[in-house]
Image 1: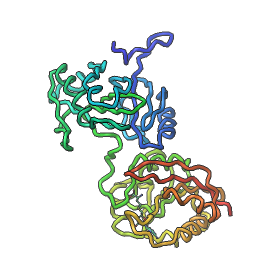
Image 2: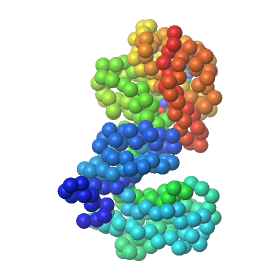
Image 3: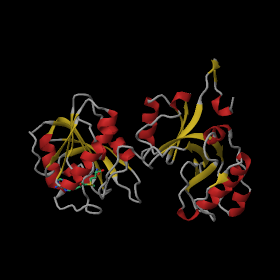
Image 4: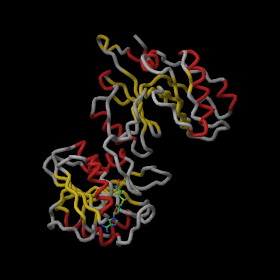
Length: 351
Ligand SMILES: C[S@@+](CC[C@H](N)C(=O)[O-])C[C@H]1O[C@@H](n2cnc3c(N)ncnc32)[C@H](O)[C@@H]1O
């Protein structure tokens, strides 16, 4: 039995060491979701959550993370210069890679990400790890240098390097978890699905509620919310018919979501009829924003029930402005997506 599978708790209970990769800022939300699903959190690093998990959770698909990998090796940061990389000797568990290679094409691919200044790049790191492993396993290494994509059927490994250490994980032949099967169409500004899933968690949606996204775009937030809690009435509206077409394609038969064309500042909904609003309105970067945000917030206050909650993705400068408009911001979570650092604000209306 491999080290990774051994855990003595009274009698032998096999456990796996896994690690989740996350959007920076979502680590605590991801850790909470992983815990709720039966994983045991061992540590939280920037963009990573390390867990110990029962073997049946190796194929788990939490929604707030980018990926979940079997940990094959963990080592201190080798150092910032190329000579450090040349001296890197990783103690890698080969058994899970052999099992993944079994019966298919014997091609390995390593994708790496790095935090910190170094005189080598991610391709150098990928090759330092992959060349050695491929030789030991009798496999071919498909280099990703220059942005090359690994061939169909390659077994994928993922390395993450930061001053906190080097982790090597096995994804195998499946796609990363953030790539959702439901997603057939996007619009400019479509949200990274794990961020949408985290926003839905922050909304604390309960069965029987009515949940609205008044700027629904291609429907990411409501589809992610419905995957986590189906027994809810979801209302998605947008003024752009093309966005609504994309949303309907993506939702594909999820009958609890209703799509409607509407202006987010003049919603065709009764006062106090919505328990939760979860949304990322246009900020004028990827999508034109010509409705004053004040007008949106006033209308959203009208349709929310007393005690209703708004979860909204905003540019970092906006939350004090939300307070001024009669909302209490209960919590903010800063996330790093596509080189930007917006805030998820959780707010309740004051008046
Ligand atoms: C950033 S996108 C939302 C992306 C969406 N969350 C997704 O993942 O696809 C903002 C959306 O707000 C819509 N929008 C902008 N102003 C609006 C308004 N006044 N009323 C309704 N929708 C509006 C745009 O058409 C766009 O679809």
